[in-house]
Amino acid sequence: MSNRTLIRGGLVVTAADEMHADVLVEDGRIAALAAHNSPVSQGWTAARAIDATNRYVIPGGVDAHTHMELPFGGTFASDSFETGTRAAAWGGTTTIVDFAVQTVGRALREGLDAWYAKADGNCAIDYGFHMILSDVNEQSLKEMDLLVEEGITSFKLFMAYPGVFYSDDGQILRAMQRSAVNGGLIMMHAENGIAIDVLVEQALARGETDPRYHGEVRKVLLEAEATHRAIQLARVAGAPLYVVHVSAEEAVAELAVARDKGLPVFGETCPQYLFLSTDNLAEPDFEGAKYVCSTPLRPREHQAALWRGLRSNDLQVVSTDHCPFCFTGQKELGRGDFSKIPNGLPGVENRMDLLHQAVVDGHITRRRWIEIACATPARMFGLYPKKGTIAPGADADVVIYDPHAEQTLSVRTHHMNVDYSAYEGRRITGRVETVLSRGEVVIDQRTFTGRAGHGVYTPRSTCQYLDH
Ligand code: DUC
Ligand code: ZN
Ligand code: ZN
Image (spheres, protein in one colour):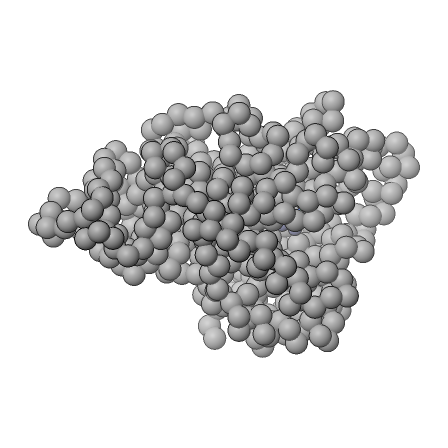
């Protein structure tokens, strides 16, 4: 009884169903669901009752792509695990999967341990890790197997950023071959970084230094080409593939061709590609730097293809690639040279709201909202049904969402540790009201009641879309 919470009268929305149901939470898990005011739920007693009348009751969001404290371009992403996970909770996200980074010449173990230490005791919500492979060699290939056993079941490779995170095709093939055996999932940053670096050099030599040239040199064709190449390498290796932050229509088309062949190829896009465009990159007075990320924002015509891909399931996941850098002192490192602007956008707090707005605008259905933001990322990265749904036995990660509240996104009201909002002034219908993380109320009617250290490391099984 003392560990019980009853959520009454809301519309429970999962990827599979919508029902007016009461939800009983006990000892941090969902204990039962029953029709609202049914004899069953009327018999339930609980220490705490939450009235969810006229609200949605949805699974906590699963953001499978964040970069808290990422070292990049001579600086660090401005959200720590503490500030970033608190902001996530404010936005209705109760699990993140962040990226531990291998340093070139060093063991995966060393990088992973450093990321465990950064997160340990600091997170407001639960978290897992992927591993960035910056140096594929005999040693790191062997270590991949150990990491999969340990619950780090996915590995990001970069076809971009030569000299930093970059892997060549031979390294990519070897890592894929290994993942085909050990059950890991390769996550690909698909942009032809070698060609991009040539275009960067040529643009700078012409005096094209403004942020908008970041978008021009990182061409759609070079995303599409890398996506195609990654798919073919995965086929050769007999490995599944997950392409991160897909931004271009032509890259979606490559994924669609592969999926039509029945290949285990998956795609993620991010809110910035759905809601922002090269118009933002072209904002005057260096303001465009706020929108520099890679893959880059595209002309707005690409947005329709991304929405279509999300509806047709050629794209399966929306994550944020949350990687914030302050305008003052961080984005400004690239004044006079766009290639020195640290790449990344804030967004971990905004994803659930922006995607709800997409429901309001008719791009996706309510259940698809939950599917792409909660259920599928949980399944893709081995967290389901503990995370990503509301069902008996699942962790009680639950959001009470007011679908009628109006809000305006702004740096003045957000909780991310960054000095601008990429969505400043955008009106949103819908707002997070109350958030439970493993049964603990961490946001209570828009007051933060959580704490650093409540969130725990969550090991993951392998991708649940694959037969093993
Ligand atoms: N893209 C970004 O925008 N930031 C961090 C790394 C990346 O691939
Ligand atoms: Zn990337
Ligand atoms: Zn990323």
